[in-house]
Image (cartoon, rainbow, N blue to C red):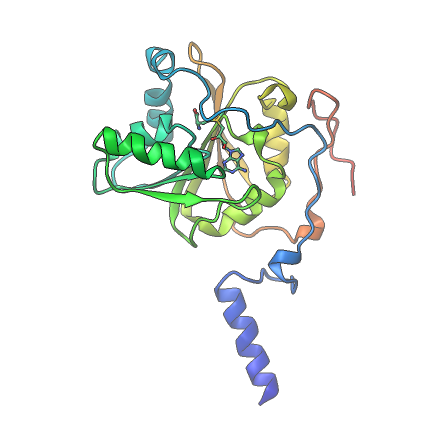
Length: 247
Ligand SMILES: C[S@@+](CC[C@H](N)C(=O)[O-])C[C@H]1O[C@@H](n2cnc3c(N)ncnc32)[C@H](O)[C@@H]1O
């Protein structure tokens, strides 16, 4: 009888994603490797002025390239002032599912006021934690992070904890500039290496010129590796990859 109860408990935990196959650890106790490079501090709620970004066609080109279309559920992670939230909402319309997520509640409050002023309704708010975006299970088709990646304290933990929120065929879109993380950018090789350490696969990469930076798109792994097997990327001071050597 006791054995049967334990079996059902394990099956329940697996079904609710509290336990990944082969792992019997309490999720909150998982210890992730730390990134081997600087993490930039949060200094602003926007990358640069929206007029310049629009005159360079940034959001339009990014949304076209990702294939943003009605019906997709999109999370603007690290939404800040909402450069992407606003443009996603305009493209997808009032019946869409858009999450504006950030770790700063004052940024989210300001964005809420902005959307109200601009007559945009239906955006859902999510206050995340630095290493957990706190999005619901199977709720997202596209997770978009614009000029956020280099500010995430621990990308291994963050994208591990994002994985359960990603639906089948979901994609993760990263917009950033090719410069060292300490200078608020992410070298593309470093980005790819850190995602691959979790089993995510890069499926697209394009320069956004004349807008700043690049767009990189990843698909998540069918199953995450056990945390103990995540091998962090080793980089030099500017974030260039030196190979994966750390155990
Ligand atoms: C430079 S702003 C970019 C804002 C906006 N995405 C854009 O493209 O203009 C970076 C934003 O990421 C947020 N951020 C930093 N670390 C984060 C994390 N771990 N999870 C969610 N948001 C984060 C910051 O609070 C800030 O709003």
